[in-house]
Length: 180
Image 1 (tube, rainbow, N blue to C red):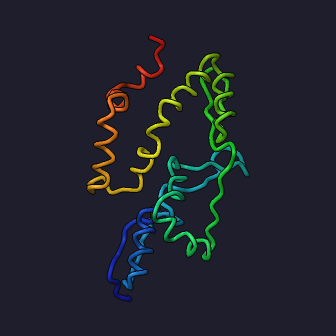
Image 2 (tube, rainbow, N blue to C red):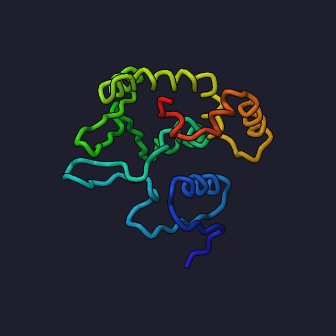
């Protein structure tokens, strides 16, 4: 058996990024995966009907494209066949009453869909996004930090020092959606 400097158990996206950086640094790396293909829980499967594909356990993967690892590794990944595909209708939700909510990437279409499902909700959702807007760069910027760094601490202190943002962090989803 060939010796390796590093053995990584599991091939989720963070393990694969780690392997890429270790290999780039000249280390020999073996990635072991129990499933039939790499990617961990981030995968596409035909779950319901033939030809109808679902992203399984993939919630925040689009953030990868905005992060430092993709900025650094993206061209190499694309040269090796990575093709990142996004769509205008990334998800939907089937509700108990038989209706389906189709969640659009377009802000205007998303607001219209919320309004279609429950009159007044489109306006409420637009207001929630408007309320988040002053903080969005800091909030999503934290995805690119090790939260134990001084840079991340400064962002968190800035956010928590704003009474409006801080109050929202200690509220519940029920308070957000409740009319009272």
